[in-house]
Length: 93
Image 1: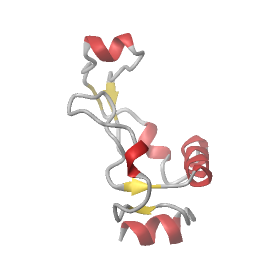
Image 2: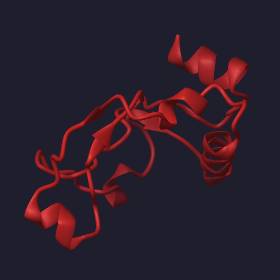
Image 3: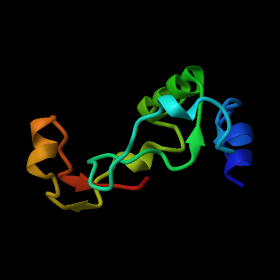
Image 4: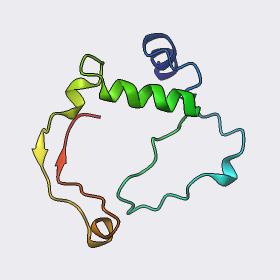
């Protein structure tokens, strides 16, 4: 379902749920308490990543409502704040 949506509805032809093949050894080693965890099992090309970023900037994209705050949480740890990561509010993903 996700593969179909990203390819056919969003036009991100190089984005898919990972089948764990390829060069995974050079990927980020995510820790349980990281401020931002990875995007699950999705893998994508830089072209698709830039297209997705543009969709996030476009006001009429499927993601426009994701930018509205749903709740104030103030959940940044000291470590997060030292890296400039602020988790003050949450919205849709």
